Amino acid sequence: MSPRSFALSLQSPPSKAHSLLVTGGAGFIGSNFVIQRVAGGTPVLNLDKLTYAGNPENLASIADSPLYTFVHGDICDAHLVARLLAEYQPSAIVNFAAESHVDRSITGPEAFLRTNIDGTFTLLQAARAYYETLTGEARDTFRFLHVSTDEVFGTLSPTDPAFHEDTPYAPNSPYAASKASSDHLVRAWHHTYGLPTLITNCSNNYGPFQFPEKLIPLMISNALAGKPLPVYGDGQQVRDWLFVEDHCSAIHTVLASGKVGETYNIGGNNQRANLHVVHTLCALLDELRPDSPYIPHSKLLLYVKDRPGHDRRYAIDARKIQRELHWLPAESFETGLRKTVQWYLDNPAWIESVTSGAYQHWIDQNYAQRGATS
Ligand code: NAD
Ligand code: TYD
Image (cartoon, rainbow, N blue to C red; front, side, top):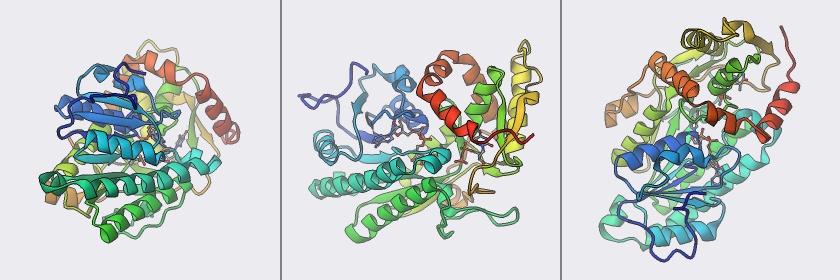
């Protein structure tokens, strides 16, 4: 744990002015967001349980910044959350903390219900009590921003229009159902109690620090090691990809100027079939690793048994955030993917540190049951 880690006995916490309480800030998107906000001069208090997906190494570049404080704890711990709010008086809560992997939600849904539903409920109750203590400008500007996913909307056929903010919720996986539940709680806490909430529903992210259980980092990490690249089913499922730093800039935009009680869809208009993504990654690795013994990396591709209940297509209509808040992504899929592959090539020690021990257990459990279909 970093030397700046919080202890409950801490007498004089660092600067509180305009600080953000970020939950799940040691995970993939959370750590990118924390790094971005600290670089922008905002004090950040990061509350993270450090599950298998949380990694303090992601935040090594800012660990010693006076603007950054880490708290090792659980969003389900009502006493801890209330105490942090009272001590740090944050101007906003940004809730990233979640169990986030669909395949894990299929083999073990309990943790998803606990963190994603109970945890969000605990945060909302604590935020509500804290909000009642605020007066004047602090009360006017306080926000609770809940980070959610497009998976709450269910699945699309190839010709359906993209998800917009009014698309009915139809979650299909335990993960999506738990996130949908949490979104509904946030909505209700605004409607009933007047808590100044914001919700963002974003499409699939990729970029630095993504744990290699998800499609893109798993394929990069396996290809570098000469291991099979497991494509579920026919590989024609479509996801709408957004570079993680663009997601973080969108969250910042919504926090700064989103309308209280509203939801905003976030996406980069980059729909790609999984097979296309894997072939693009292989081509990038062939180019950037010309001395690899595994060229062409595409020969590592292996079709495996499909995911149960696999959503066929996600696509985000992001026109509301573009029109009302003037947010646009900076990266195209091609530029973002190149940066991502280069990041994994430049950080073999990071891959090494996250793919030992418990990770191997998950890989064995998830892929042993799938077998090869080609
Ligand atoms: P992640 O799995 O990489 O990170 C989750 C973080 O939350 C980890 O640091 C973990 O330690 C922490 N955490 C888990 N349970 C906790 C608890 N009970 N208390 C405190 N901390 C806890 O997830 P991610 O991919 O960074 O996703 C972050 C958020 O963004 C999630 O809410 C997810 O639903 C949402 N989202 C993700 C994507 C995506 O493509 N990854 C897309 C849209 C939305
Ligand atoms: P994933 O990264 O798990 O995100 P999500 O399920 O939340 O969209 O998976 C992205 C897509 O890639 C999804 O259609 C499942 C597919 N996939 C594979 O084909 N092989 C794999 O090994 C993994 C992890 C995912």
